Image (cartoon, rainbow, N blue to C red):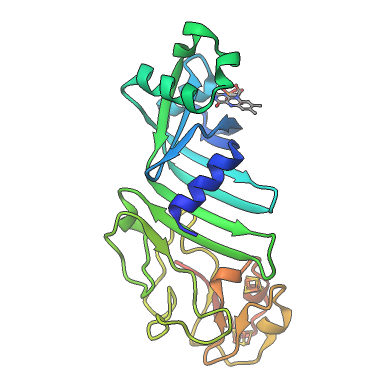
Length: 252
Ligand SMILES: Cc1cc2nc3c(=O)[nH]c(=O)nc-3n(C[C@H](O)[C@H](O)[C@H](O)COP(=O)(O)O)c2cc1C
Ligand code: SF4
Ligand code: SF4
């Protein structure tokens, strides 16, 4: 899974939840269509009279989420940018989504304004598989600010897969294990969706309590024990139960 794959899932779901913050700081959420996904960008549109539009004008930060029938969820945070060439983009959106002509016949379509989201953070969370599987990504410009590479280093690349893998699913160390991902390599970079969850520090005494209680059995024995980040629910049970407080929140 990568950023384009996540955006493609949102396009396929199409009717997704878009959250904004209103003028009084309250969260607001509504269903909006993902009209186009192209070149790592997500396009949508809304009417100039809507509260949604006003909120985007006041504060372009949005959070978007959708779920497909396979119980795969994609979540995104980013900044919605209004597109300059309004008529061209609205015509393009109507070409790609012909049912829009029934809702906005004729010239009425030009009450709509086109927006795109071209950067931010993405999370893919698959609850349809066992153990669960998750990954998070930064994408687009500014990805360097909140990205970890597989060696835990900050990357300047434009579209970055943020590794949450500590080791391969068979329990063997993966190729980046010499510097354990997001754990030994200094504090994990913490974004809205990236670098979250828990990690086990060197204070671990190897008692095994975390592994015995973990609902996904995604902790591997070792010195210290290690969380398989790609399978972790972020439930916090290990964090609450470690007798020596060796488990800490990532990025804190
Ligand atoms: C399936 C579905 C798809 C929708 N797609 C859009 C859309 O793409 N753009 C839009 O402005 N409103 C769309 N709407 C309508 C908005 O959800 C509705 O106008 C909402 O009230 C807008 O948010 P607001 O009340 O905060 O302005 C859709 C509604 C549904 C049920
Ligand atoms: S519960 Fe704490 S000390 Fe025990 S194995 Fe897990 S992390 Fe280590
Ligand atoms: S937070 Fe801890 S107990 Fe919960 S799934 Fe992740 S590793 Fe397992």
